[in-house]
Image (cartoon, rainbow, N blue to C red; front, side, top):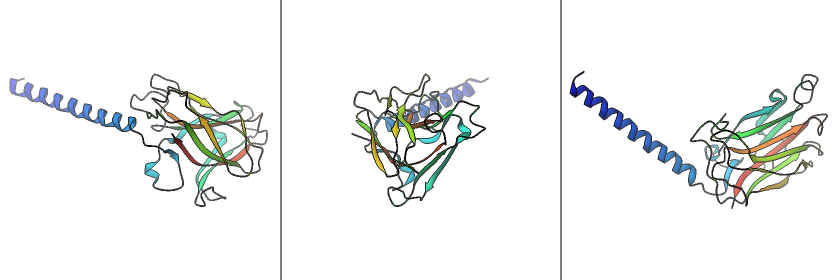
Length: 209
């Protein structure tokens, strides 16, 4: 191997290292300069401005059906998210509960160093929900994704009994370390609280100061 060839390899490695450093810095800066309100989901505006992906099914994943463009009496008069949690003879023999995480990036369970957002300064996570019939019992939270690069916080609402009318809910975050939020939003439901299953709707999910 000639000295000239070795020098070219060395320069190429330096260049690639520089490019990776710049991209990492830009990626980190982007995630640490979040403007509020910081949307997880909204039926208004450009979907490219939303953050997190509804990709993290937990529990009896096969019992969840998700409709992202539902027009059944949406809060905003445009569309909303519809979720059906089914309890059937096939799911009774499994875990007896299910849930869904909105993750950043998609399918990230705390294993991606660049994953999540720094949402320091947010005081609450706001969302709107209603049940199809009323009486659906759902738990809502943010954070709690484990792993080396998982969430730095976890915050819950006590078990919520939905009505058939849209209601605004808030998860308080003032005492939470939000320097890395991987699981931007999550719900769980179980068959003990919902023996016939549950159908409910979500809209306008965001963090605010």
